[in-house]
Length: 236
Image 1 (cartoon, rainbow, N blue to C red):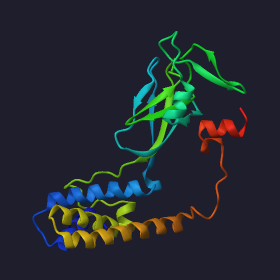
Image 2 (cartoon, rainbow, N blue to C red):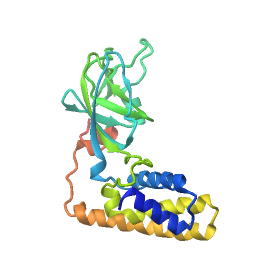
Image 3 (tube, helix red, strand yellow):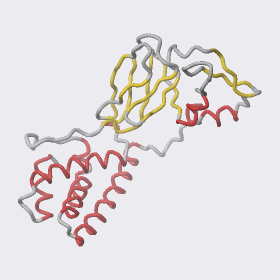
Image 4 (cartoon, rainbow, N blue to C red):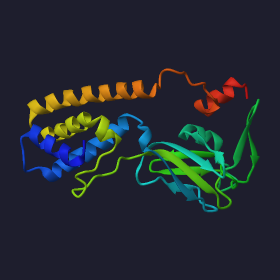
């Protein structure tokens, strides 16, 4: 179903003809909300960027929605959470930067006072990510992630994509729900809310049945475990 047809359907369900601009926004907002509830393969994309020597923080793509994977100089970087990053980059009072740390059987030991080099790890910091060690040169990064669905405008009434083709009801009910809330219509808010939740559940089931995500178990690798669990498992 294309964008224009969805606008007409939503207006009909709300029984209003004076909310065209709002309805467009409600449809676009719902598409983003749905994309946050399921990782659609058609939204998985890549972007390229370059590091700057001495710079460790970089902005995420403006259309970033989730599931960040970074390759730097043909090496996949390991993701750390904030706690793991703190373990790896403990402050050394004798220097202004952070030392690289290696783990031994007796605990953590400082490898050197060097803080620059080819990055091995990254940490998500809101709408930025931080590399560690700090790049010491220019490296090409490939950033893989789920992007937001395109925002359709008034000039794109014939626009459609995978989501609007196979899950148009979820988009319509979500837009109707936003409309009912805007109109302070409690009865329709409850009705459209139920329909939206049901359509989301049906969408997820249909997508899983189509892609057979649950039919083959995936073997876990060391990247599935946090740093502490990984070290404990290998007694290091």
